[in-house]
Image (tube, rainbow over all chains, first blue to last red; front, side, top):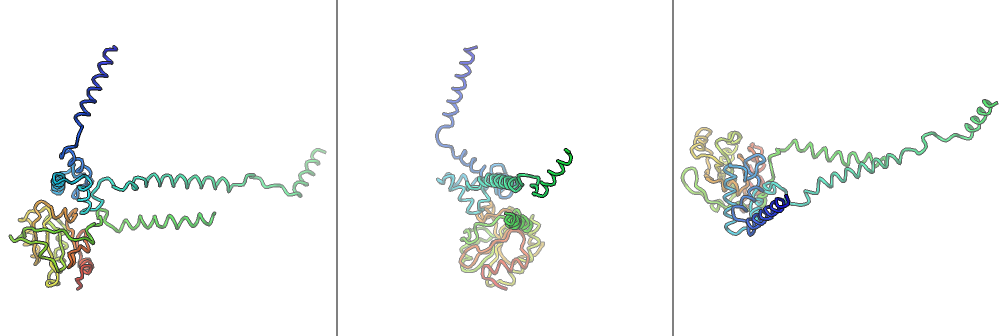
Length: 150
Length: 174
C-alpha cells in the first residue's frame, strides 16, 4: 500500500519534470502564431477568432502573423499591426485593463446606492409611531380612568 | 434630500435612456475606422482589364476606393450611385473598385449585367488590400483627399445623398 503511494508520487513528479522540460525555453513560431490568431477577431465571421476560422480573410491574417513573427516582430507589434487597420475591435479581449474594472465598479456603486437608500429610509421613519398626547388629552384620560375606578 | 432624489431621475435615467435609444439608430456591426485621418495604404494591383494600377498614380487628386463583390446584394443598389459620381466628377475625382473575395469572371459578368462603371477595378487576390483598409465586408468605401489622407469611410451601401456628403469631406462638391 505504502509502496504503491510512493510509486504514484514518483510517477507524478516525473510527469511534472517531463512537462516542465518539454515546455521550457522560447515558444516556437507556430505556437506564438497560434496564440496570436486566437486573440484576433476574424473580420468576415460572426464572433469567431482568426484561429477558429477558415475564411479567406482569416487565412490571410494567419499568413501575415507568421510573416511578421519571422521578420522579428514581437507579440505586441503583431497586435498593433492589426489594430492600426481594424481598431481595437479586432482584439477579442479589450487591451485596456480599466475595462475589466467597469462591472465591479458598477456593482459596487449599485450596492452603495442601495445601502444609502435603506439607511435614509430607516432614518426618515419616526421613532415613535404613536403621536404624543397633549396635556388636555392626558387630563381627560386621567379623568375617565378615575371615573371607571369609582 | 427629497429634492435631490428627484434630481437624480433626470440626471441618471435620461442619459441612460438616450444611450439605449441612440443604439437603435446605428448598425451594430459598424465599427469606426482607425484609418480616418491617416494616410491611405499604398498598393500596386492588377486591374480587371489586364493592366496595373499603383496608388502613387492617384496622388494629387482626391479618390474613392470602393470594396465590392458580385455576390454582394447591396453592391447592386449602390452601383448606379458610383457610376453617376464618376460621370459627374470625372475630371477631378478618380473612383477605384476593389474586388473583395470575388472571381474576376463573376465581377466581369456583374459589370456586363448592371453596366460599366467608367472607372478601373483592381483584383485583390489574397485580400491583402482589404485587410490594409480594415474591411469587414462589402460594400465599404473610403474617401481619400488630394494629400492622400483618408477623410471618410462609408460602411454599407452608398445612397446619392451619402455620396455627396462623403465627397464633400475630400473637397469634391457637386
